[in-house]
Image (cartoon, rainbow, N blue to C red; front, side, top):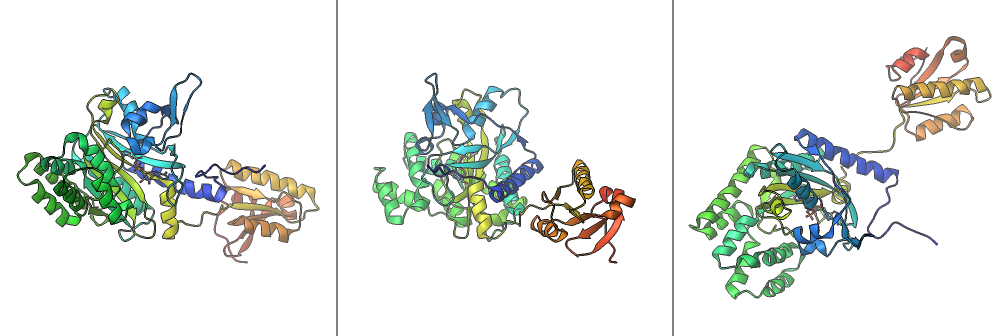
Length: 439
Ligand code: HAM
């Protein structure tokens, strides 16, 4: 019987692992330079944590099971409820603002497709305990800081920003009942995933009067600075609505001051599927062939309260390795990650066992000095050993020869330039990459 990796889940052969590590190193680097501290939580949580907090979209995608004690558990499909639970438990003791990041492995029972798998790593950035829109701007800045770090330009990626609180104000002004909002958000979130006729049909299923239907269709089209002006007109004199529109304008001003304006676009079509968002929401998309969101987040005002914590609001986002890797491939941004052997040690005469003993001791000494060093496991001719050094991308080759036994010298060859020079072994161990003089 043959087995393969479960549907929508990946094996990481070394080349795939190198790409995953490359992305993750940048997640860590960008998080740390923006002042975030790393945290983690358990791989599973009680099912109810997600049932209550994330909303229907995610709950239908949960891998869940009863543990031996009959408790309903779920493998984490996202990190935010765990974060809220952890912060709520120590809310008073934690220094504010709380700036935390995490890189959890998540599982969602989605239909696997390009950019969406059943198991993935998701970089999470969150700021809690700061209500000012500056925290929202900071989070968006961090996402874009990462995009820039991996070489994505505003021509290749766009951060679409919207606001659930502006949307809520407009819906309230137009007579939508508070309890209908979640259903309306879930419907509007499907706009970009459906053809226009299908979307209109979905709007009809909400069962709202014709003018309200028209409003929902029109709202989804508001884009760019003119879109924000249009929202300003829609809220009219409503004080709360005005406040929310001002906030949105300030967010764009701050992003401009931070120098990431060219990546950002106001787009009321972004609503987000998760139930807990209450303020600005944002989602980034590649501008090439990949249609899926590469990052998504927003402000959640009530989440901590619903897990028994204080009324502390937070803002953050998640972005996965799957979509980032697709984008890197699409725009040819992933560098050559083939493994590099810094030094390959060769014996000049495979018939002389004493030389091989020196190969082993020199290799061990290089490794002790934290230099990646290798040698051939087979005693074979020097040509074959050089070929192996080449296959391993060796930068330098050290040739152990008769002179090594008599006066402790070795020949060193630079595999890039082809220059070879005899040198004292001690000097080579101290600096294997010293400049070589052509003979
Ligand atoms: P989300 O929109 O469900 O939000 O996911 C955020 C990002 O995770 C997506 O934009 C996508 O890059 C990636 N992602 C989601 N599902 C999959 C999948 N099946 N395969 C590959 N990648 C996927 C959240 O998860 C929120 N908890 C984010 C957040 C953090 N909000 C505030 N803080």
